[in-house]
Image (cartoon, rainbow, N blue to C red; front, side, top):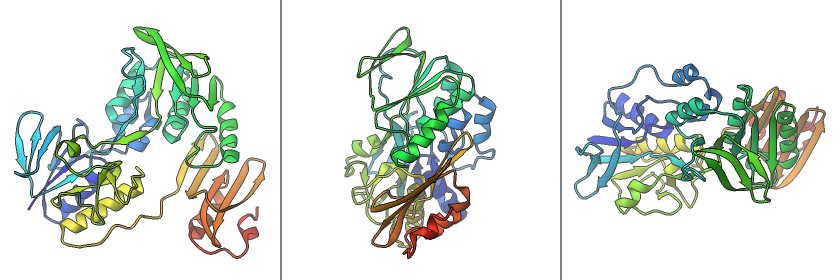
Length: 373
């Protein structure tokens, strides 16, 4: 049996490694020239090429091919490579991930970037000029902004929502994070504003906000979200919704083709998170090996973020009744629904990380015990 995998992110790499260990013939195709690396670590390496190189796996397995797949021909079970070669598969795994939203990247101006892969990080590192604007105050945007500022650049973060990290934490916690960030020199955060346009002569010179403000800008990093990469699947007429639709075994509308990770949609959901990518990968390689273990959404790993010496962690969902407490630079919010802890936010509260993990999805009798600090 010949398995072909397209994509060398967490999901694709995991499946290839597991199947290879089991003696299954695997070919993994990647349109990147480097070996496997963790994308979530790219922001912390901006401006440091040696640190970037250290992200990549030192030893590369023989099943990885650095060639782009440009088409899938389902009737003959073949893929077409950019160099014109075609390769047969018995089963095909789409692990194509997602692409960044690229506002203003078509402006024709130098200095406008997105950060999604290794080459992006290299290009940004080579092209950084102050002042820098970052569109997006989520995890990627804020972490990138802080790293760039550490390198000595003036940075402004433009966040369309009312506060930063709005998908991970509540407003009280976000305000604490913003306060910590703003203690830095030459660091600014503008919330409840969207970018309207860019101006410049060859290179970007200013970012225009919706309220008319003009922000000086010689480097623009767009970190405003991603969209599933479905072009190959769409071109071969697989069933597409928000992403590539899959069943409980990660099979697409063509049962010989699987989709996993960011590019896959199950029951209308495509969260784009590493725990989801790894969970779908597990279902996929087990099914290929003949083990029918249906997909179950995992308990998501905590989101962690560090703004200088302020540790941020969040678990679960911000729904139900919120019980919270703040003492100076420490803040906790526990969300309870139907007597169960469904979400936790911890700011500057490292000692309660084990308690938060142990309490998630468990019934709680006395909330005062959780807020005992």
